[in-house]
Image (cartoon, rainbow, N blue to C red; front, side, top):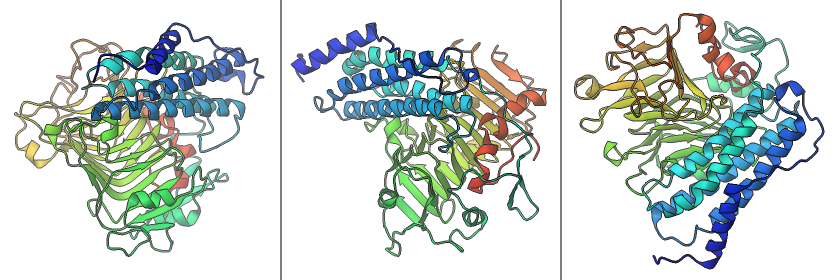
Length: 532
């Protein structure tokens, strides 16, 4: 590669410099689309800022795209591709923000809590540029240095918009599941009409049955032996309609599917049903060492909202020596994994952004194996550390909350936190911690869970000396087991041992992800509050 840049790239760099120096906001004089209590600023300023930032993203995207065809380096190509995808996702999330503000009563798969929805979309848009920049790790740094300024400018603009939105009011109703409850027959009962009409009663019953296809004809069947409509999962997903408000059920028969699957942002409400954990398996082995960015190393990735997966395994078999190697990545808002396994080593489960719920799942790994900047709850899960590289420390979580105004964080409840047999047999050779602060306002709460002796007495691990120890929020509540003792726990300013149930309630399904407004129609069982 020569030392001179093509003329059109040079011109692009001049534009990048201009964007970094000045991004004027557009005064749109928009009318008052939604209630003033949602905002800290006049509506016209909010709408104008959102529109201006979308325009800026489009300009930056145009410039970054010019780099795509000028470099033959595989890792660099992947990093640029990530940037283009993530910038497009940021523009979409800002568009959702604008749409929600203009039509505050439109459900559109949201929770109905306008402030919470706005902050959720903006939290997602905030983190995308960081992920883009991180993708250049391992490259020569040239392109990273050229685009980082403009990407950071986008982040600052989104940050300013995020702080314009007032904190969301507490959800109405108690945290015990009202207005949705489970009857003795384990059927959903409600005292109001189901606002999520896309998943009808017979599909809810189907989700709760042991036999995945009893009584219902899937929209598509995938089978390796040719007895279905497709032999590849990606082909079945391609057949699903775009932007659908109705479910599209894909039944995936038993077998190991060696393929890389991505459900794009326009494929809404896809439901995938397998034959069981480790019976239906989606497997891959992409890794950072082999030239993939962490983001693009995922065996399975989903962006389309309303995704549900049940009774299957997502795995990345690259191994600990290949470092970052994602098995499952999600940017799907209001998504659920139920009775699934996510298996890998470093960076197993990338809960990248948006609101996610994991129930009765098995998650295994070594370093930062549950990470990202989503708002996610892991309920009744088996979270198992594995034996990795010699002298390597295990960290279960690495939550990536960047700003205090973000709604994001991880909550682990009613779960079993332990290790696989090989790790349990050699606890003194591999130390395991509950998490470490990936970003400044990292937030993780673990409550009402069992911790085996695999967890070190200190509980948590620093990322880099004292960095972020006073801004993070780590908390524990009513945990038990040999690893749950708090006598030797770290004494960081941001660490909290919760004794008040009102504090812990903030991280329940009902409060943290507003689950009572969207989980009941999925048919997935859950506990809304602190009581089982």
